[in-house]
Length: 425
Image 1: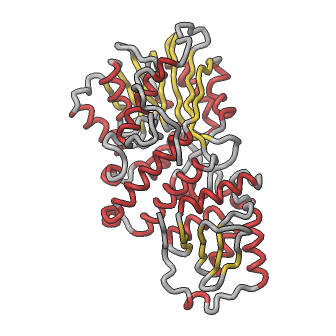
Image 2: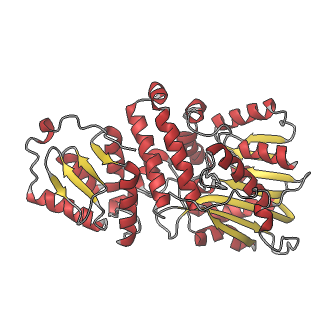
Image 3: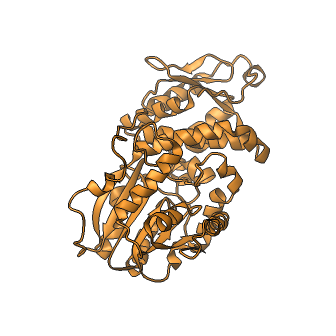
């Protein structure tokens, strides 16, 4: 996908486009700190201020000296804002340019960050108190169900899909994801399930309809809960699925199974032990559960632009950090699977559908919104493809649960014959 954002005429902004010696030194220093990615960088209408040692996969053009200096001070936040506003253009494949930068950053041992003291401060997640969590979730999830319908699958799944084969459709892969989760949980008819963070309700409906369980699902997004309740009533499942507009910390009752898909990123590391206590009081003896979350290989703050503009209050944990949920209460971790490449493929589908719907989206929002979400989706593809982000599914249970399968055969028996293969990007 080629992207050319802004910059119709640079002459009025930069004149000759010649950089002062200090500014050119600053450009080169920043690019070297990034691991010398194969990307050209130019300012205004001038020639490249930085050219990589080998073949370039694309070019980044910064509109003016002011934006260049802002990049040096607040690199993560400024790059995202400047791209959204048309003050930075990317020529070439946006995903490949970003993926190359992420890969070089990792090799340069920068921790995947454009690290400055201010970047660390700006990336610090906002608090996830009961009151603040509602505001954080409202910022992203309550911008309109009609918007999300334009580019998600027909079940409105906004989490990583599971591709039984690389050429599966998004709809097939999202159903396969829900079945993959249900098989891991070993659901049995008549059991009670509690779901923390249910999105638009698709997994709860799937569990009730396909596996014969009853589900109580909690979510603090008013738009999502409204949609979920309507779907449950339309499908005749409102007597078996209850959607409660409340925080996970308010979960009441006891259940056979606990499940959370795509919520842990919004909990905050400081609340993991609190989440563990909620799970402990909610699960019966012999209970089990699954947590599905974006994660990282090593602990670091969120990208400042993502935290400020896209997902306020978000944090992606390492497996070690996730153990803060389980260790204090003595839960046994039974299975950990990384679906990183599945999420990269999911995001590719979302981005393709988003681009196809951009004219409709422009009537709902504006061009800045489109560029913002394009960068968010493309950057996420690149981050998963480069290994900067991971996707962990962790299955756990009470320590004395012994009626467990001896092998993993039950996870794949229902996936269907020859539909196997390796993910490719």
